[in-house]
Image (cartoon, rainbow, N blue to C red):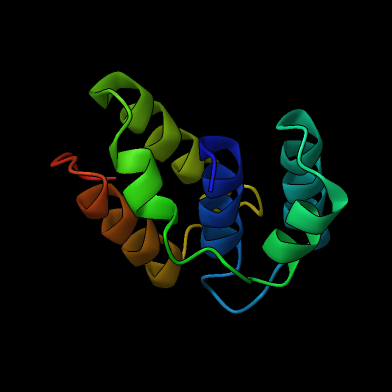
Length: 105
């Protein structure tokens, strides 16, 4: 898995963490899928939460500033619907921990 795909898998995970993906969140996900130039097969994998299990491991190999940027983007995404739920916070924290970042997300 390449890092662009891994990032999108983590984004989808955060957006769906509270059990609801709003229209605004779906639009955000679609914009990121296009921005990262994923193939249609990869987009479908992200949309259906398939094949994302190794995403954190892929991104953990990136330099610390890039990993922090990813977590910052995930926090912004969690706020896309105007509220930050406990599930979204826990998911971002879990990802940050998995990426080897000690900062609170």
